[in-house]
Length: 280
Image 1 (tube, rainbow, N blue to C red):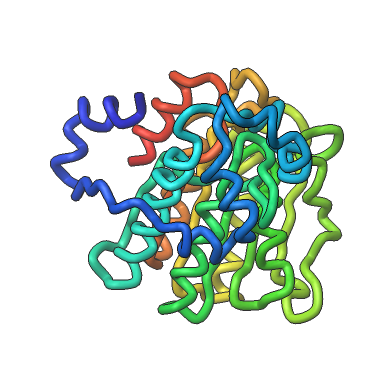
Image 2: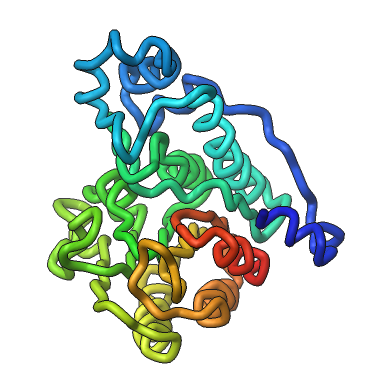
């Protein structure tokens, strides 16, 4: 739906639209364990009842069901993010976009919150091959836990997440979670309350991100644009408009640093599509 809107507004005339080759199993094990990737490759709706122990171990079930084409689905959205990183690394563009990406909850060896493969972690690993420091920013209503966890011990990636905190999935993202060892102070969490609107959100977002950009001086930025933070979202509880959400994207673009834009959550589908088209 987002793609059709982008196309309908003639925006593809101002972009290069690319269908990348699918990532391989070797690519996926850069951010996931071999046994987990192998499981995603093998499991089907017909065989899942024979793999109950693995279903439990890899957290496959309620939020993350088995369906036909699961493995290729994961490879498809991960490919967009990895190829986006490749285009930035090779200076073929200054902004790359993959609205199918942004699956920020997936962990190294388990699925979580509708996310099976963490395309963001994969993309950042590729960006680190060419960029000394990478900044990850998450404006989804849910905490970007899988990405934070992956880079919790390093100072080469700073993660900044603005999210609803408290009795809310995934339950992580306390303001006191700041990273560990080499990564201490390189994880930034901004826990927010229900109902925050555009003015209040930007009042927090802009000063924090201005200081992060000034102090950390990243050489590439990955921005997860999950639209669950929009007003009227079926699972969300924030009060952002599309314009307010888009202002965050516009602000990060103003620093003129190579930028990878990714999708993420959002459960009132027409609003999600409108939001991402607006941000394009």
